[in-house]
Image (tube, rainbow, N blue to C red; front, side, top):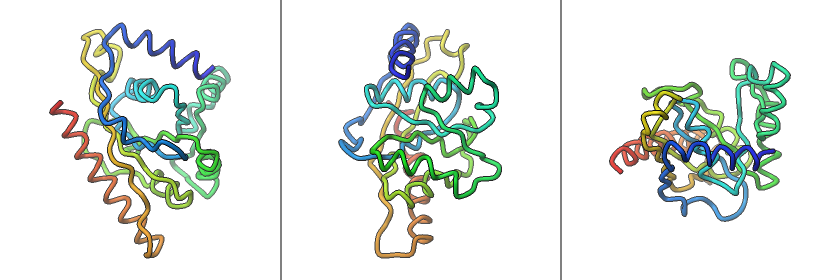
Length: 197
């Protein structure tokens, strides 16, 4: 189901313009990792998935998307898993930790909501990385954010940054704070870089 949907989306989206992917060689060649991408609309989710094919992305998505039967079925078949963003608990990282142990790729949008503004990033990606000992790969997207912008043939671009690893020889809290700081800096640096390409 995932590959059928992903390759179908690739064909459909390509009618509006092919995505340009920069620095894909920075993605780890083996092992599980987390992609933390900027988020400005629903189209970036689709293009991010297409840009990594044939690698599958397991998206962390808000639990509200799993409440209706047909949508819940679709989300699960697209490898998405629910998270309670209002009341995150220990169970929140159980699924992504298991997936990372199986060397899968997790997709997270640390801004939480779709925005073109610089907003404080949520700590979910860093928390999962800290407890899974998996790297975070920062990514930035620029391009169409909705169907109206797709019709304007706005060119989509995605850029990947260097993997960010949890610092060693320090407390977990300090290491997570440092990882959060680096991720924040890298995401904004990549956003500026992609805008210039």
